[in-house]
Image (cartoon, rainbow, N blue to C red; front, side, top):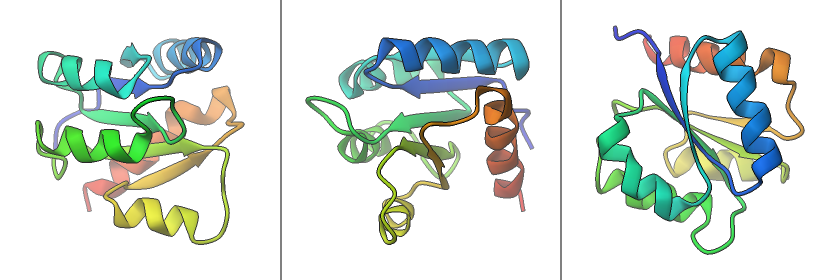
Length: 128
């Protein structure tokens, strides 16, 4: 199984982007590409070749679910786990996101000190 190294993070809020980048690079040792929109993610995904995609649900323009669908037209999402990040957590919401193809959902506000291990756990579970 490939080692998890490159993570694409799609998030429109610059402060959340910064916290995630620091948390994943400094604590997790990952290489992180931050995209501030779904459109930017679509433009960058084939060049960056992420091992994992962390995707905000609520974004202006193209939301996370549409971004996921469009990413699936460009790369094999069976090979690249996607986790959504969202503050909206009604029962059924997480199930809905999983049905769309997300491996898991990380709830905002998240703990920056635990984020890398949460992502690694999703990655490890995927190898079973």
